[in-house]
Image 1: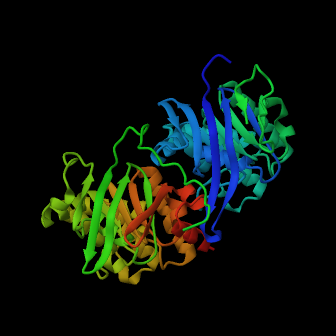
Image 2 (image 1 turned 90 degrees about the vertical axis):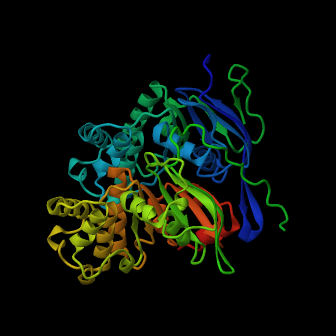
Image 3 (image 1 turned 45 degrees about the vertical axis):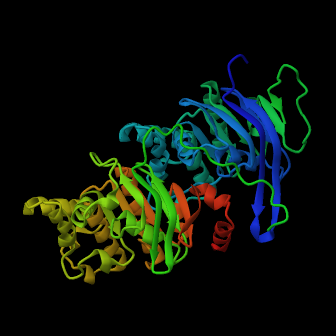
Length: 243
Length: 273
């Protein structure tokens, strides 16, 4: 690795203050690691170890209490830990993606329009965006007769396919995955792994939490184990991993 | 006060990547009515194309703030600018009553919770929409009718009823007429004051969906006031939380709902069903 990292996380710490209990909850403390373009980083740890919390803190649904998340955006370097809300909103539109297991279905918006929306917002024509949207719905195994239907009534698995097609339609620089394979059938899971491999080879950096990491085994470059609060960096070559 | 609640969240920096200036900028707005402080040192910045949500209970000052944005009222102190061509540095509170009225008619649309505030209930729906255009100087009957039709259609109002009077319409349809009137002149700013409060849940969802579509298709900058967190969560990109005339917290909508920082916001979020 000769290039500079896309993401440099330093001493990142998250606690939740719970005023009604007059107490606080430690989620994780002093997390540090670097992430390079095209790298796939797996977060490991038992339930409650803070894997999803770490993803959400980088995405900024959660506000960290200490540390830095230095991100090399195409507009210059910025610290996601304390960036202005409007800057975070801009990066979410343009270069950072977050995939959860839940679809934010909206009433009366067709599956293909939900999927096409990120492309539309990025300036693609309606025809172009719909074309791509249908391609990805097909890839994830959503049947054509559902493309123009409203996903609010779809089953969990079908909703998740729509969700993934939408989340992965626009290549981003950084992709955060929070258990995207939950509730997927075999075909959709295979399509997801293919798409992730494809994005990775285009240079997209990925941080993921997986219930069954075996699903993406061939993509994983490095792991961070959130159970162990000691320095987990034993390899001198890969000195950009430190937990 | 408390034992050990650990470190507070990191202070957020000023915008660095955002290249555009806010469309709406309010600074140090304070207002008292007699002994009641309605607003205290309120700052607000809303960027082009954003939906800003304002939440808070009755009496928090959220509607008062919205009325100021609509220039219906002026504060005791404070500054208000809109980045409209040629008026970038003008404190809009310094304008005369007439200038304010013209500026509003051309650049700001508003939808009130109570349709009686926004509509003439005994005039036709299309007439209500056309009135806005008349104020702005349009005189051709053809153009008035066409533009009214177009705005009603964009608000998903059934055109076969465009000559019905609002008093004969359901609550959801009345809100669509208000919306059509508000967007007829393609305003830079759309203000929504509890636009779906009091509607049946199913009707509420349809009206919100119409707003979403408009926002997506026309990129209208919106400020939405509601005490209903569900409405704010569905619509807003960013949220300001108000209490006793002050902004106690603001942030990205998902952050305010998932990781509220202020004790009042935590209470509000936890109280939501």
